Image (tube, rainbow, N blue to C red; front, side, top):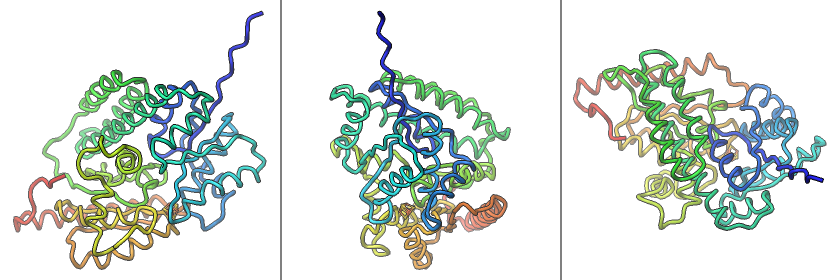
Amino acid sequence: MTKEPKKKIKVAFPHMGTIYIAWAAALRKVGVEPFIPPYTSKKTLSLGTKNAPEAICLPYKLILGNFIEAIEGGADYVAMISSPGICRLGEYGSCIKNALTDMGYNANYVELQLYDGIEGIYRFLKEISGKNNPILFIRAIILAIRKVFLLDDLETKLSYYRARELKAGEADKHYKKALKIVDEAMNTRQIAKAKKLAFAEMEKTEIDPKREVLYVDITGEIYLVCDQFSNQDITKELGRMGVQTRKSLTVSSFLKDAIIPKIFRKGETHLQRANRLAKPYLMRDIGGDALECVSDVKYADERGIDGIIHISPFTCMPEIMSQNIFPKMREECDVPILPLIMDEQTGKAGYITRLEAFADLMRRRKRKLKTEEKNPAEPVK
Ligand code: SF4
């Protein structure tokens, strides 16, 4: 009698931008089936909001909604990325686990302790795969890290092309194809090839190289900065207005600070720069990404770019603090700052109006500075 092949367990992670491509690769590498829940939508938000405390931050509601959709879709495990956190983040894991149990879901819940570095990821892979194969796990971790860096580079390219494309939506069309190329790469050699192919795909976008482009940094709470559903696709909207964006908080910058061992890092990390530039406005880490956000304003000002946008979830404690520091920073920093607070009530029309007004303000300022010859033609990025 032939033996039935062993059923692979399906593990789901919550969404945050394109990160699913990296974790799916790591899971496949260790022989686990990734379960990718439907991309975050209004339905996800409504499921999360219905089952979460009203005043809890937006990322919690969206993650909970992702988990509900994953379990209902057939995931065996839901994996939560947790960290100690000075804010509520430290409690997210147990709250989500309890919420799922209270709702009667009996999928297994597993935590990935990111702040335990490589060791935390190793423990996690061991738990979900039931294997103990150091070489395989290290390969899976390296593959995921390489993908994260490539995905962030690709997004930077996307932003360049969106701000200059001749035909609306062309850059996004090529970006979708490029993401597929990255998704298919399963080892270091394939990643190198995928990088060339994906960049070549992006370069097919026809652009107007002479378009007057504005340069804007996006900072804020990392989930909102990286996740296009929760930030209402801010980089796409700005791209349409001729604004090239640079995300100050990315998963790759986080990995450099929290996961990648010091000997493999090049240059100053985001956290190191934050500790250098946030003073004298903020003297220590107060949780979330507040220290980084304060320093990002200073960094944007030093580079002479056209503006910085700070996005935060309603009721996010660390970001309420950083927004209260910005008025003091405005006395010394010339860079225009736009703070945006997001929650499930944020409407698209009012949001776009604010972005358009900010783009107008930056454009007028840029032209004025140009006539006064105060601003370099291309800011140092
Ligand atoms: S950083 Fe803000 S949004 Fe994130 S968990 Fe903490 S309070 Fe919530």
